[in-house]
Image (cartoon, rainbow, N blue to C red):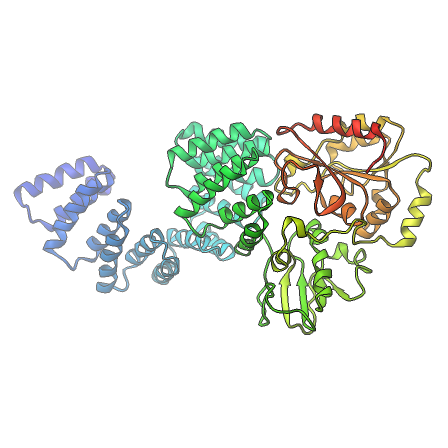
Length: 608
């Protein structure tokens, strides 16, 4: 027993076996020989010995609990749960048995029961940090990150600076979309335990979310140096390489993960994402289907599958699959109201329909057109939009009531999130509602003032080269301004439509000769008025692209090799915006080719 309690399990096992040679039915020797064997990794032998002990004393609660623990480690969760159920039946105050029941139930994906088991264990042992941490893990799996945060904070208060708890805290903060904090916590764990591979992966994940993919790649590579077979290391390596416009290398990394873990759904999903980054979308769909066979309700896989279908123009399947965004906490889709959600079946004549924004400003601009279709079908429409768009939409349609992002109509009969409307109206590629001259208008007086303010006699071209740094695909869609300066040499009037200028672009902006009116652009109505006075807008994929398109302004859109779903594949026009022309990268990261083709088009004359 002294050897066992001191952690010298080989010597302890030898001693217990010597006792058993003399006394084969010695309960304590059988029990602790089983525990020592389990600690040494001989789990089957450990289970056999503990079962022999329980045959002698079947009501020994600790032995029942320890049998359950060994069976959990063997992956025999139903057997483990049966043993642990007997333990808590014999002693309802056995906190360890309730805790281990929670672990077995978690492995069986019976999360509500697992949380209940942890709650009972915490009632009995509120000072046990491990129970609070495991409860946090169950809550994360239940997509309850806010509750998980409370449990993890309690675990760290009870056992400060313990690396596994810090790693778990980093996971939770990542789920709550607080990557800067997640990074701080992961790095704290690494200062305490530099070879903690999981902490390195949490660091990689946070860095990617913060738009720092090169550092994310380095963190994933560091994790793989510690453990070359670490599947998550290969998956986050793949994700980093996609952001760095290296899709072929990303595909190789994801393929390695898939070979290492063929039954791990995320390995198939991430292989599909790498294929998607190469525009091999049909193959990507096969991967997503494989992942969904293994885990049918995996929300990120369902989301990725929907985006692939839409990018392929398979709208009938795609819009339906896009409804899975309701499962993601990262999107604000269908809200819960006592009134029915409109899905296209009920007639709209004389119905009060409440339509509400759900994603980015560009999405609202693009899909607000469907509110007009609803009004034309006889509905009395209230449309909720984000604050920066309110003045722009003031004269959108006299039959549609525009309300703020946090407002609701006093009464309505039906409701619908904005991006469900394409499904509700049965949108196909050939039935996209589009207007040659757009469907938004800038404030007329402001547009006239800009027309007077800008130099006359030359083409007036608006330019946007970067979007929000917080956008998931910003590293691929945004361009450094310095790369575009060659376009500005043709004698045209160039106007910056950039609201926010990054520090890395400031020197290029000052040297460019671009007219910069960012101080005058308080909202989208201001930007729309300026765009109305231009001949052409050249932009990367941001909300300004949608604004220019919705205004019916000739727009040239610079797209990464693997574009957002709404721009489809290969074509040079957009069915959403008749006056838009698409300039696509021919290979990942090839902005030079895009800029060269735009330069040639500018020299050819007409902006259309």
